[in-house]
Length: 152
Image (cartoon, rainbow, N blue to C red):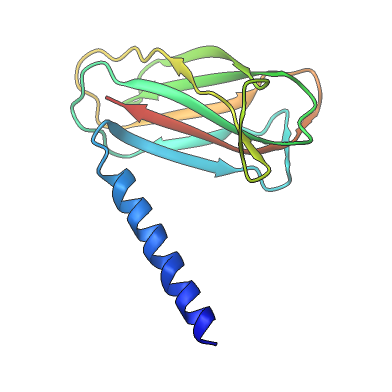
């Protein structure tokens, strides 16, 4: 019983220290992930990230992050990334990710991020980013989660 309590305390301290460390990184503006619940990403499933507030940052960078499982059948992935800032024009980019250069994280593989240009003129307050797969198949197995990272 004492071992369980000590284990819980140790895990709580470790998670807290990790969160504190990453929350102090001032380059990150926004970071979020969406888990693919069915372990298959359907052709017409759009993942939407709604960004409510953004600090006044000049030339922010957008990166797409994909985590795959070991049953992902391909070496690459093509995505469509749509950006809409302050309800203005939608900017659409096609992003190609090389899945073969992954990093193993406990049976989930992190794909190297791909930078996407952000065409922002002036000050923006909020935005919306939609991501969906660009493929011929009806579903894509082996996708664990999809995320975005906005940095200074």
